[in-house]
Image (cartoon, rainbow, N blue to C red; front, side):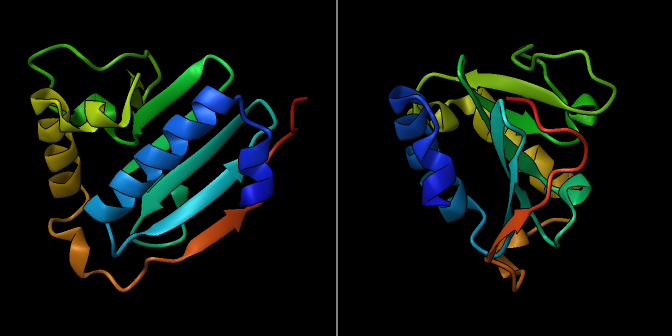
Length: 139
């Protein structure tokens, strides 16, 4: 994990480390699934070892850090903070770990947790799993 983090831009790495810690505190029973896609490093919090079942993810790229809602298209978003046009996911660009405490983000995290099955703190996961990324890696 350290080797993967070392490839990131210093500002993105610092933000990823702080935000990862906050999400681990928010979802202590979930597994962290780590994917290296070459141009991005993705960490997904999931009750099992399937990224598709993940609640949220962090997507670290050279241009910044995204908080990705795996089933974001189905989440209520009255403040219109979610970005993206993919068929399933939506994201928010993060500038600081404190962005996770913004009321609209807290509401989205709570809604994503409910959508994933409720109180996820009781899951017996909590392990870090480095996953093989499917498909071609980009440099």
